[in-house]
Image (cartoon, rainbow, N blue to C red; front, side, top):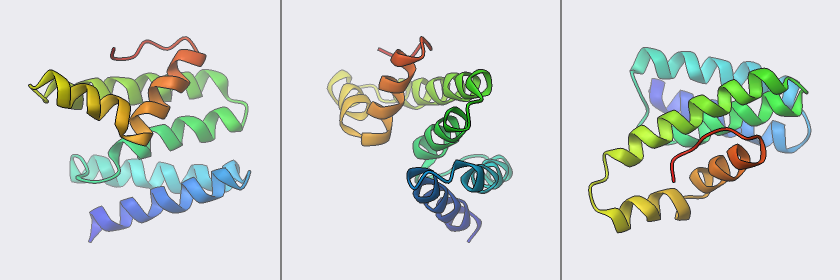
Length: 116
């Protein structure tokens, strides 16, 4: 139930941020991060959680915190990608999963190191 709650918070935060309401999205995303910590991970939506958090901070003009959040998103993505042994599937995970591709693209724009 807590994992579903965290996922719902991320989805709602994403909608609010997309509507230009990042200030309302940020506390929801921070709650989802807290739940993620208590759950020690999420089966679904983890990449989106870190990406949405970074995007909300950047949308609010907090570039420093946004870049820090984006660096965390990239580290978490690299950790998860590193567990995929097959190079083809690993690259597909990075390129074909929308939030992973968006994370890498946003990192490139802001000069944050990411997984190749």
